[in-house]
Length: 300
Image (cartoon, rainbow, N blue to C red):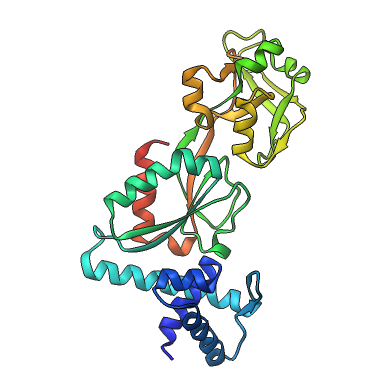
């Protein structure tokens, strides 16, 4: 048995989620991939995967082994790429994670331009509005919006998200526009549940507000829709269902065309930082450094 090949195969099985997907990616057969993993388990004397007709799951020893195997596979791939052609000719896979709407609207075009500049690189783009464990899922770079909790992850700020309260003209034709934050309690407010503040919306008085400049007001809002999907929130806003406390990039073209409008212009909403974060063992990766620099240079 070629243990190194079997280790690489196991890593791809775990990261793609199935023997068949790994086989397609590796140009092999499902049977051959399964046999390689089984041979590795026999060699190690431990079961690494629990197999079922519906899914694969790592055993506890398997999770520990795969974490180290991922690191080794990535480091060897980096070393070989740099030896062959130097860091200007990056090679191999990058696993990148982001939220769904941000990934589709803002990140995907930058990934595409990065791939055009580095034809030897392949990107596995994972989009999920929920929390993603970078170590467990083998993610090289995640783009996260908001203040970061203290952690061992390596972070670089790559942009800023501006936010506002938005609504469609159809909604405003049925309801008077709020003049001050307190008016929001009378409106159907659509809540994005992945925000740490959820239904508590925070505002700061600007020069035109009927309050001292810099005064902070927090309003507990309510409505008939709460969602963990930014795409659902976007669709609900456009259909005139209610008001949203949202990042401007979520509806940038629609805002320019007047399909949604900004409200409470005399009150500001705190901007949120955008960070690219990586596990500490990936911070020296040439591919990771190049992608993060590409994102930072784009001015997200």
